[in-house]
Length: 351
Length: 93
Length: 68
Image (cartoon, rainbow over all chains, first blue to last red):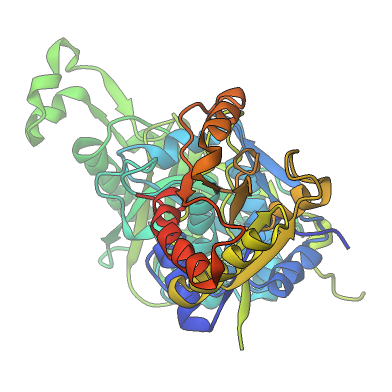
């Protein structure tokens, strides 16, 4: 059995452990589960990885990210061994170049890493995708999301005022993880839209702003419902950042049923929003940004790079004509990344 | 009953000539004393170790003796140092 | 050398050995490396004397091992 390389500390009890971790800057401010060797080993065993396995390297500071350190932070976040493969998959996506790990996590923009879970693993870990999907919906998504943040804090030193220069940040920086409801929809799951084969679990990560909730329960016309989503995207272009990239669109059951019944697929939604979510630069003058319109007032900016860059997620409780749009950190400087969760991580039902 | 918990950070390894990062506190740590084994040094370090435990909350004190007091420490001591949080070495008589 | 392993260290010596230690620090590339200095000698200082020297070293330990 391979040795763990991390230093250890002996503490009197649970409360002393809290003080040790807080005083060293190793927490997000909330209590942590003390990471004992046995808890960490249980995670590594579940994932079938040796402690020194390198998931990736943060390229700006050449900082390796090992399975051992990810397991320690996952245990601290409250993860059980069955949650750990999802955490690993999320990190393997975050270290891909197009995600821009350093830029996204250090910027004044204050985004958080949103993790979307697809596939059979959701059922195994109890990841809900139902009520309160963007809030505290279940233990699995709460802890997996938190493991990401603690890993950033401790492995990459992303701390407020240090490497993390976020002016405001947002609550997603505590935990930002949702599971798609794949059962109560006719739509293709997000993972499969992004190339993952059916039956294979996946995570999609995106450096994201906070969710912006909208409401439209007064029509059954798909175009009218989706126009509200487009308007929310246009508003974000005006108020926050005009630049296009991926956008996440969360559609709960009430609105989803209407769209599905009318025969709209996720691809249809992407096409519609790509067309409708766009503004001219001169609109900036309406919202106090006239100074930078300059002579480019007629330039058109789309909130989505392409119809395919719209990531539609079926999630949320059964009632209420609500939806949400989640904007990217900064246009397409960062891209959403989807990776499979290794076949060995998911327990298969016996045939 | 105590709990043994792990460091969640990428423990820093400074470049040659650079200092190791300092500790926030000695509480819960393991401190190693390396002496030359001379009687006075041993007693002095025993006192120091005891004071660190009772007054600074150091969890564990380890005493090691260099086989050759004028040479760098033996390899097995060097290996052990990696698991300590701080080192106190005695120089001279 | 402990420093290079990432472990903060403090060297303690008696007044007699200060010059030699300074030379060693220079050779190792850390010319201003500070040491804790205690009264020489220790070999026949008696238990109370050793305890007193230990107490005097605590301040140096705080300064050298802990973040400021």
